[in-house]
Image 1 (cartoon, one colour):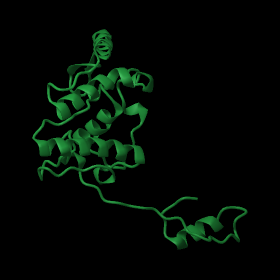
Image 2: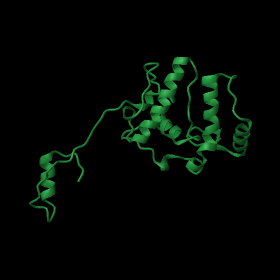
Image 3: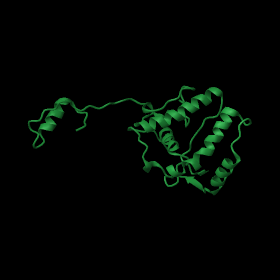
Image 4: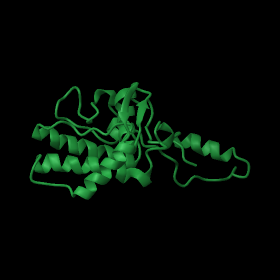
Length: 187
């Protein structure tokens, strides 16, 4: 059993189960508790609203799980670097990816218990699938890299790649984001 009750209570609980009256606990269960800041104090770039240039990611934001921490770390790290360079933040919206849903939920709704990124939290889960991640995000990522590291000139995406992504972007229909009543394109 996994529990966080005091060891004496765990012992009593186990011995009250039929067939385990004489059982002895070798190692009592324990729980790890941690404090977290109210993630509504963060911007969508994961920068503190209270202390500029201070970015947070992971359990401190009220999440649990390696994937959630890694996703936030990527976004917070990118945005910390952009902030230092005086560039605008890199924000992934709810309509673009699960990272966007995770960060939007945390920064707008907050959390009262450790937050996990469940598929059921995503309004656009039929559109945000692993099999179309490249068509949703690669073009944006390539443009981001081009703009940040190479400026507007000096780096050119292959024309075939550009036309491929422009085609898919044009074919995706706009989606209405129910939380903000804003119309945003999926692509």
